[in-house]
Length: 148
Image 1 (cartoon, rainbow, N blue to C red):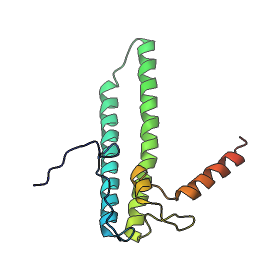
Image 2 (tube, one colour; image 1 turned 90 degrees about the vertical axis):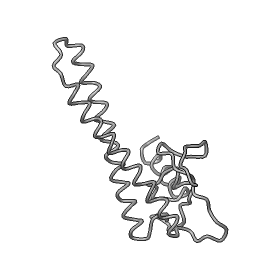
Image 3 (cartoon, rainbow, N blue to C red; image 1 turned 30 degrees about the vertical axis):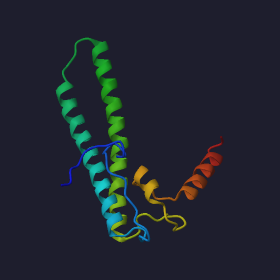
Image 4 (cartoon, rainbow, N blue to C red; image 1 turned 45 degrees about the vertical axis):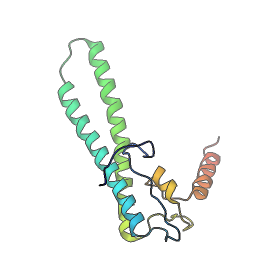
């Protein structure tokens, strides 16, 4: 009987089980694609729930405070929440793009050089579009052009 329980071997905020590679298994086969499709969908669902929670929280807390300090504190809290939701909105778009890449058959491969991104890197960052070498090169180039 299979039971799902969170163990110390689960990864990430959504608690998925790491993919167990089988000897001789082809990279980005259907089982792997299903694994990442599930991770991406769970992550998107979690983010959408956070958005719903924020909207609900802001509606409930939108009471008019007569004290300017209370009002300013609430506005600052709302500003921070909206900034986080904006960042999460961008992540949702990246998740949707990653799901499209799965459907197209190019998920898991670097958009720059075409190399395999790697199972563990994708588990750490399911929306990764670049292999570690291209990402490192990209970051170095970014530092050089930003004047650091």
